[in-house]
Length: 355
Image (cartoon, rainbow, N blue to C red; front, side, top):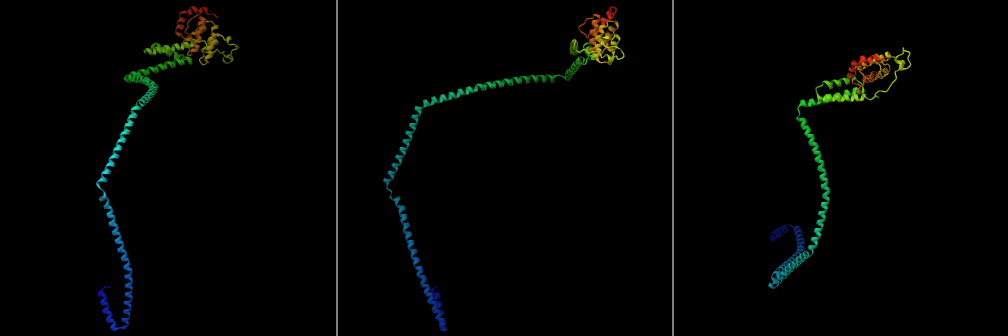
């Protein structure tokens, strides 16, 4: 407490004490206790302050010593020591430069000494690599040349095809139609020849003859003539049809005949003229008429050659007529020649034909 507050308190306490003795005693007791507590706190604070002062003095002394120690090196160096340090640095630098020069010189000397050997070894390696590259390059070049040859050949074929396409494109529509029409008619000629050979169809042969004689296109005339020749060569073979005996009991049940050779001229001619009979039976009838040698048989054979629709029957009738009359012609299907010969020589031949 401050002095003013204490004096004020004393005055109050004095005034109270005069008025009340008990209060005065309590006030004294309180002052004594407060005084004791104040002395105790003061005794505790004093050592703490002394210790703080001592520590502050120690720190100040240490800081001053440190500052002196920092300041002393800068002030303690003399010029002689600085010169000696500079001399040491320059000596070290000179030694480093000299050693670097020595090492460089050693490398240069070693390069000069060993360069010829290294150069020789390097040249040998490069030569080997170059030779290996050349040896590998030769088959590669050969393969490339072969491929180029194949490509050139394909290009030639393609060029020809393009030329053909170009020619076709340059042709007019009328030319193309004419060519296609010719191919169609040429295929028809081949079909007619096939029918005349395989089916013995006389009408097909007659169409071929008509085209050869009447068509205005030379190419179709040549084609028809070729097909006619093919048909006639096929009929020159004597083995076109196998010989088959006539079934007497089936075809002539009303006649008492056991063998086909016993059939008379009228019976054979009736079978030859029967268009509903089998072609093989009619061919056999034409063959058997060769033994009859009479005017009726000759006339019937000429009629078959002139009018029959089956070329196998016509061929057999022509062969029998030649054997009977002496007419000779290698072309068994030359109907006009046979008819013309008969018209000119029938009067001479008929008297000699007596069975």
